[in-house]
Image 1 (cartoon, rainbow over the protein chains, first blue to last red):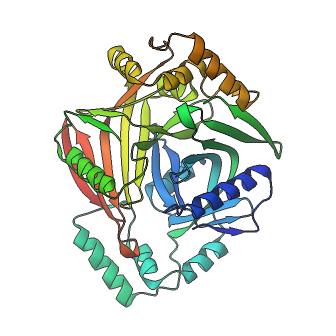
Image 2 (image 1 turned 180 degrees about the vertical axis):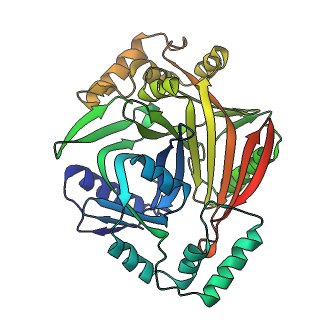
Length: 198
Length: 198
């Protein structure tokens, strides 16, 4: 689930909320899973991974991660990202483009304080995406942290990422690939909409 | 569904096939949906969309699309892509990196000849991702093509894209975010594997 707080009331946000409710009604699993793509500048290549979107606060979309991970490095070198939801229960895809930044520390602190001890132990113990010899080492580091460390204090290397979309495409499948595609682009603070061919 | 033909027997392909079978057994919908990300060089930004993966022929992964679409333009300017599957029924994510190219014409011809008249009419009638006034125009163009055009001959602007992965990450969710991550990287024709921290 995604937590909406004072959700923006412009047209693309209303469409997003409507699709979200339809997908929830159809019991869409992992509805908060969003593919975030960034550019790996050294490799001149895109890079993509799913994360869990936690909040949309007005027009600020927030997920949490490790600030020393490859994706954090990629965001710092090039803040342009593209995002995808695909809710197969309603056969709808949502494409988003945005610039990404770190979330304000107080929001990260508050979210960290609300999480389970286990999740926090993992966030503290794991050097995300660094190589390790065995999966057993992952579990051992986790157990040591869970039993010995302060699990309330957010570590400096963990926190939120925020983005505010400047582009939405709502793509809904239809028979014979007569898919419906509606785009919204932010232009001088105003959403301009258009229809794309399938 | 994805059609496997003479599937490669190296370790990452065996893991992929195993996860695929598990997801099928759990009735994963749209199991063929794969997020393909490319770089929009002009915008210096990643761009992402879901497509339907149709075949894996040995180590060649194939989907079909419009050759005059924005993604085709992006592939021609920078052939590096990243790909994602997320099968929520088994809570597994598969990350792939590859270079993309056009599929050989005979494979595209053969696939086009096997599709329904309706799907071909849409492929012929639609200028993919170009703006159009209304959705009714999309339907009208489709109907005119369906009733008047040769639906057997593949148009020059439609065909397959092929990629051969040089990187796989198999990501399986576990409790407390103790996720399992195994990476395979192609090095001088040999797959090197490692374990990543969650």
